[in-house]
Amino acid sequence: MRSQLELFRGKYALVTGGSSGLGRAFAYLLASAGINLYLISRNESELERLCVEVQQSFGVEAIGIPLDLRDRVSLASQFQEFERKGVEFNIVINNAGVGYIEQFARSAPDRLSDIVDVNVQAFSMILRFAVSNMLSHGTRSFVINVGSLAGYQGAPDMACYTASKAFVRILSETVSYELAGNELITVTHFSPGGVQTSFSEKAGRPLKMSESKNVPEPSDVIEVALAGYNKKDVSVNYEDNVLKIESVKSKEEKEVEDNDGVLHKGIAKRSFVKSFTIADDVEVKGAELKDGLLKVSLEKIIPDHKKARTISIK
Image 1 (spheres, rainbow, N blue to C red):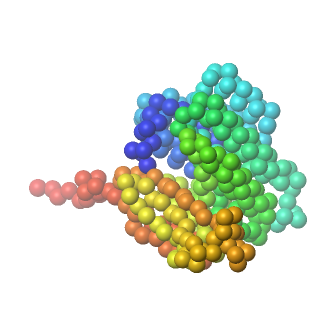
Image 2 (cartoon, rainbow, N blue to C red):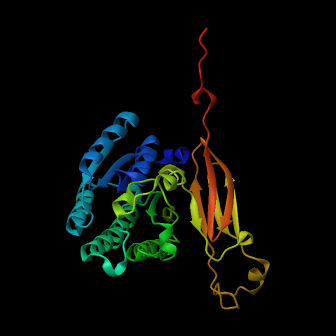
Image 3 (tube, rainbow, N blue to C red):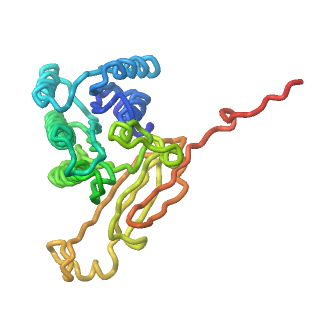
C-alpha cells in the first residue's frame, strides 16, 4: 500500500480517532508514505506523543487537534478553520467511534447519546466535510469510513452500537453511489472484525488472554462480510499490490437481467467491488469464505537479516 500512497506524498490527510488503535496504525502508514497529517482525538497527551513520533520518524508535518467529537459546535468550528486556512485534504480516514457492551434496556441515556453523537452525527459531519472539501479542489482523493462487522447483524448487548455501524455502512454505500460519476473521489467502507485495540476495554468487556491471542493487530485486518454469497459468487484477485474482491454474475443472472438491473426472480442485483492495497512486505496466503465472512490471510515477510538468531561465540 505504501508504494501507491506515495502518489500523495506532500499532500494532507485527516485521521479521526488518530491517537490509538486503527487510527494510530493509519497515521503511521500515511506518514511513512510522506503524507502530512491532521490527527483528531480526545486524548491530548497521546496525540502530542504520536505527532512527535511521526515527525521524527518520517519528517512529515503532523498536527494534533484535541477535540471531543460529541461537541458538534466545536467540530463545525474546526471545519471552518480548515476552510479559512485553505487546507486541502486528499485523504480522510473517518475512524473515530465509541461503543458500550450492555443490555439495551439497562443502558444509561448518556451512553446512548455518546454512540449517536460520535458514530452517527460526528461521522456524518466529517464525511460531508470531506467530500465537500475534495470536490472543491478537484484532485484525486479518497475517504475511508471505518465501520465494523457488527454493522451487518445485530448482536446481544450491543444494540445501539451495531445499529450505528449499520448506519455507517449504508451512508458510505449511498454516498459512494452518488459519486459514481466522479472519477477523482472514492468513498470506501472498511469493516474490520475484532482487532487488538483498547476499544473492548473501554466498551466494558476486556478481551481475555485466550481471546486476544487470536485477535489480529490493527495493521493485519482484511475481512469482508458477504452474507448470502458462496464461493461461486465471488472472485479474489491479487496483482501489482492490489487485492480485488468482487462479485461474479452467474450465467443465469446474465441471461435474465433486465434493463433495470433486477433479476426476473425478484432479487435485486447487488454487484460490488472492493479493493485493498497491500504493502510490499506482506504476502497474500489465501482466502476462505465461511458463514458469510470472507477472510483473506496475510503474512508479513521478514527478511533473513532481520530474523532473530543466536550468534555463536568463537
